Image (cartoon, rainbow, N blue to C red; front, side):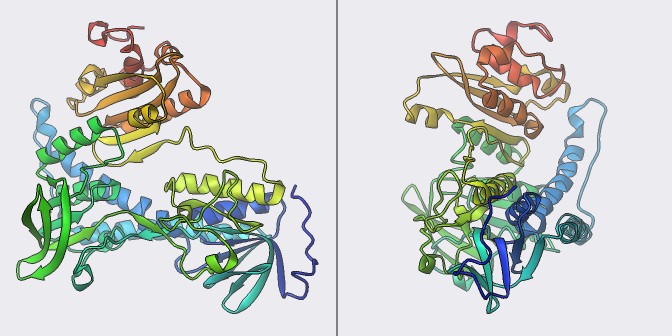
Length: 480
């Protein structure tokens, strides 16, 4: 149960509505915080502004992965000839129909997982309107709502780069690109992060001529072996990847949208019918009165929090993408749950992302957990590395698709597993085993001695662990 909060304290006496907790933001983080608090017995004001459900269900995870999976079927059809005697061809017959089917799924999940949940919690009151922090609570549409504690969970939005001329051209973001009902003939993607990679491959497989323009290459924060391999695979699919660029200006021309860049000090122009700006996301902090209320912001605009999700303003917490880090929907929900528990029960639970899995839904998929080699070395840790190509994994051989690799990072002295990075067609469904191993403090020897099912992608983790001490190419099938 919650720690008692005096609802009749002088700071809140006389207000029309008094709550134990006010949650600003009705996305995944906001709902997680509100439901957690309700389960603890608190009275909660959940404040939404705009479409309920937030980024993931409306304009992020659900719609993007739906379209990605759809175009993946085209790729599978068009590469079926890798199996002898097989020939299949696929193409987009009606992109508008696919987009509308995606919209139907989004609407159904928004209804089932957000709107329909509210009546199940008598202690949660939903309020619609722009919210602003005030002393003793929040103000929503000129109405004061008194609350003993506040959690800010307003998410993030696509960030725009400072490219001269961008305001004068029509561009898509990760949000609006998913609403396209007609495919362009060509698409220029500015940015090589996960959004640029996922959507770039999706549109390319749908038949669009795609160019990805990046400053630091594809997925620069990932292991360099993975970024390099993904670049090769994209090139093989006909995607033009241009790295090491400096963006100079952008303008509309009779041929489409033209991006002027510098490449190795030489001026070039990249032209496409449409342009998609995919250069990251920025926390939604405008209009909340954060600075006036004494809430400190990070240099990049996120709300600064400690490991208990507390902001610099007493009794005010923040969770999810608005904090500017770990921008994954499951981490938003996790952080929001902790924020609610800490706000109501004495700040006893720390935020721990040491075993946080992350997935990029390209094909092959990229799945990671724990430290990269560079981060481990930067921390002064002596490490040992194991890298196994998917050509050593029987599942990949049976699928006749050996694109990818598995890389493990371990402490050179103790053998403790520090990080795992998988590039594989089914990598997303394999990473949780590594996450559990890191969480449990496994050594790579323990991982190597664990029983794995044969002819699975996840068996590659065992092989990579064995490769620290053996040549896995010289092992028989299922060799322990």
